[in-house]
Length: 283
Image (cartoon, rainbow, N blue to C red; front, side, top):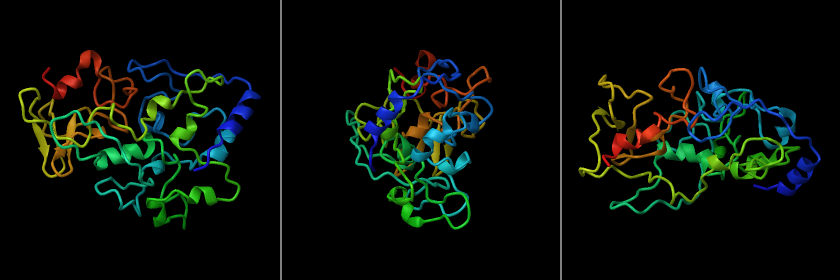
């Protein structure tokens, strides 16, 4: 995809500083957000319909505001079949080659479906609005499953930005008082992130998973109800039960223990005093 960083910089220099009514950091170090993180996914950062954008018109050349919340990830029909196991997945799949964390004493299989879906935004290489089945009749195109070039072919298009493209303006210390998106863009190099695509070693250093949905996941059943609740850490079946991005994160949001707001970083449970880490790790 083409980049227009210089253009954006020149335009930005001529624009006034924008004042946003951001909520304060909600305790997970993920910075301020215009989203309330209350009442459902539509009030979180994962609502990509520009509901929280002050300058919606300014963003139009770089990002399709489809006017819906779920469509940026899901479709009720014609889902992406290239990502097996993803729930009604609507996004173009990333074809990036990932550098994995390798300091583990076991094979690392690479991202499974419950990581690939997250990385289709967060590896920074796919445009945010690259989806297969756009709202409205006759807008489904199966070629979009692995190819986002269609975005460049649209008449009047300037640039549909990837997350890496967005960070050309959304960076630390930018002069427009807009959020820094660099924190959410991990890139294809995952060697300094928690390993994914790995099973928990069967040693005394790790706790025993207590719940199971056969053929789908195993999980730490905190409340003993034999159901994988949103706030319970889990491993997903992908040639064995493995740690994936969604093991610790729920993209739809999980309530804080006080029940008033979602955990800002989409964690399944708070990591205060490393409680999330100690769910799996004994030491």
